[in-house]
Length: 295
RNA sequence: GGUACCAUAGCUCAGUUGGUAGAGCAACGGACUGAAAAUCCGUGUGUCCCUGGUUCAAUUCCAGGUGGUACCA
Image 1: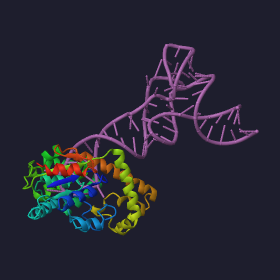
Image 2: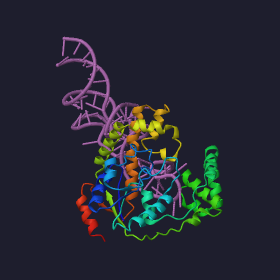
Image 3: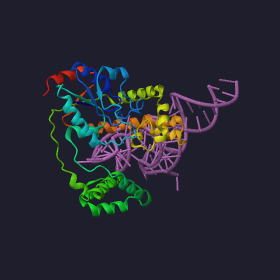
Image 4: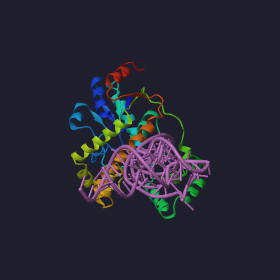
């Protein structure tokens, strides 16, 4: 399995198409947002002709109304890849969703899925009484997690409590801290360009999205703005504009800023992988050489 | 050419009754186990335009210079 990752707008699509073509193989998208069929412009999915040229998996597979999470992604990819490896020596997994990438490459523990009733209840408690009663509750239910997690982060606190309540066991008891073994080898390639160039590319990409009609796409999704999938950059800022909270110019400015910050967080996540081989996205020949000599 | 005002962080600007400075925006670093394009934590990055003068001490006061803005010619 070859994984190609990097920050948004670095040039993953173009590069991965060339490599997939060269090795006559297919692409598995590792992107937590391109998976939703209603969000095309704002997530910069590959163009129709590109999708025709190379078979892509996990793009536009779900509706924004479907529930999905990282663990389901892990399972889906493991199942799909074992099927595809019957007819291919090499598969490409391409995308910038670090946590999804991590779950496929190293696995993620088997923890109960959220019970939405419990979660809703905890969210309400947090809104009405703040975080400290929840922290007290967590300390009682699971002192290990209480010590381990970021206690400033409401989502982490709520998640830990919700697992304790729904399973009757401490959240920490599900954490094996073990890497799952896969029946495929892994080569990780990371794409990297100077920060300044990346920001120029981001700005250019946002201009293209606006030309393609991002505003209109967002307007159609506006009624569903509460959905998790729509807490995505490019959409949530337009929702603020539609709701009269910011001007259109401010919304676009926010999209630019949030995209840059997102790119930084992606880079930060990918830096953790010691095995990552970094390339300039134009150096496709270099990547192909590296892949051919692997391992 | 004359007069007035201005020059401080990447940008817009505040401030120091003389003891080397801080807001907003932007930027940067980090964490991450089913919301992850989410969420959370952290960081001021400076020749206070330049050169002299006064002073124990000047970004601050004074003089000159340079650049800018406005008005008058």
